[in-house]
Image (cartoon, rainbow, N blue to C red; front, side, top):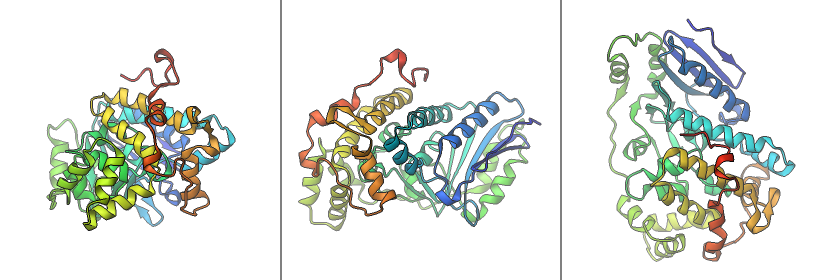
Amino acid sequence: MTSFGIDTGDVLAQVRGQVGFITLNRPQALNALSLGMVRSLTNALLAWQDDPQVHAVAIRGTTKTGMFGGFCAGGDIRFFHQAATNGNPELEDFFTEEYALNHLIHEYRKPYIAFMDGIVMGGGMGISQGASHRLVTGRTKMAMPETNIGLFPDVGGGYFLSRCPGRAGEWLALTGEVIDGTSAIVLGLADYWVDAEKQAQAWDALAALHFQNAGALEAWVAMFSVACDADSIRAADRIDQYFGLDSVSQMVQALEADDSDWARHTAGILRKRSPLMLHVVLEQVRRARSMSLADDLRMERDMVRHCFHTVHLARSGASSETVEGIRALAVDKDHHPLWNPERIEEVTPEMVAPFFTSPWPATAHPLASLK
């Protein structure tokens, strides 16, 4: 058996049988990813990818009361706020290394099984959407809520959201709406439904699999996954109708002209999000629809640099849209971000376009090596 293992406190990694098992173990922060956790995950996956004794990888999260129940709430946004206001260069390292990890998972040469139980948001989506086996439960709460903090759905969000059916990707990216496990399966963001109470049994059963036996993993899936009532997304036709419009301004105006409860609710959500980033995100998703994953991640790496150093708007650090959004949600917790511009209708194309201009020449891009 391989001797590789990690116990950094926040990430536990060990090999049992023929499977590498990873447990995110930072429950007090809903397993939010730190730079150290990103590095631990990367080290484990790289070591196991070329280890002939490891045939698959499984990943789960913990809660304060035990294993499972919560996967990962995203990146450590408090660190983002502190690093951006203090000029800590590790902020740049975080995004470069996190996006490289996301790419590694999508391109991983062995089965990667993600137990997407409980909260799966932001960076949690980044370490699960590339899985070969994405498992959800009745407790799954999935979202890409970044427009709520003046950011955008990164970690490959442009890539995987844009590939949802119809205009569901635009809807999820702009509103940050939370969906359940059945909706995730319908939208192509999950593969299998597992009874939440049987996850521990399924996890342990992986350690007993003999991957030399053809179909061993498929038999495991058949044993523990169950059919779920995966109806079509409620309001799917209206999502396509409104979120297929050309601009965010048109979307909001059309929603506000519709007196249905769904339209009023949806318009109200958009009015609370960062107007600037709503326009940026719509452009992101629509560009990403025709991009490879590597190109999308390079684009998102450009975008996140502009989020914290918005040179074309003379805003940086504490004055940036993203730091202001994090302040309002997670630091001061007043939930009243001072968005700039204040209204969706005030955002101009000249404010949006520079987010998609790379601050690096292609050969010197932090993610130039991604294929």
